[in-house]
Length: 416
Image (cartoon, rainbow, N blue to C red):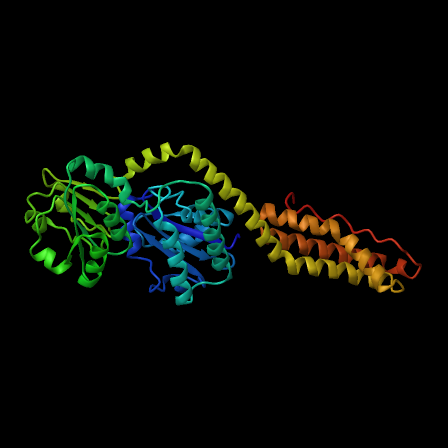
């Protein structure tokens, strides 16, 4: 998988500011990857990460991809290449790299990103294999290792603080009825004493979700113009700074805001207001670390299962990529046997050629697994070049009936 790369930022690398910068830079509508020479790319954008998975052009490595794609982005991204890129993509899909390990949303988000890229025509064989593999392994890990209850999300990290601030319940408005907002609303609807208001730009969508949860609903426009009294806000919209000082001043009972939006829904001026706590991707880091510590054993189990499945998938990928080379190598030995021993029967020639090719084929597989397909191509070229010279040297012996042909040991390219 040396042609695969994953670059990006997350809650752990740059925080909310980096996520906002990257979200505004990469999307399916943006042609920057194609202009930079990439034929395959899939952006993954969630509330706590922005990643770009690409197939590398010939001659470019992951660091080169980072320079080509992120030269004008203010936050330096991480860069994974080859098998490491596939491992990181799989870790993302399984939620092992999430701010809240075990959250349900990320697998659907990765699947959705892959489907959107397929529809946009930016998926090719390398990215197709990578996403299919990552999603398959993620499904197996989540099925076999219990990391979290159903409907666990980023909001789950904020819920203990909300319960502390509102010990006897209160009125909570959820801004946004998308996937993140819906998960937060479902969690809140199960909390005793909470009166829930679902707010969305599309009032019909807000009404549908509210009806399902036994809550009230409102259009976003109406809420911003004349908000009802609320004790807490949960924000999960794609609108930057929608919660500003003006709105907060209309909510005298407001005690807590949970900002799950990307870009951040809460204007920076609100952070300075007294008697109001704001939680976002940055401030939820400590809660995520604490939860990760409580899951140490299960996370280790999930990592081990993921690694076993990755090893198996990569072995299968390598074998498929080596198929034409193995065929070429065996055909080379068969041609050599036929040329050197023209009187040998077809069946005997094939058996002898297969026997001669066995060790070089094993070497080809070992080189590919340890050093990549590029190194395997070099190994194959050296093997065929050496055998061509050997055939010429021994051509005079063939007429004398030389019935033994032993291939020279291939050069150890790794030591030269």
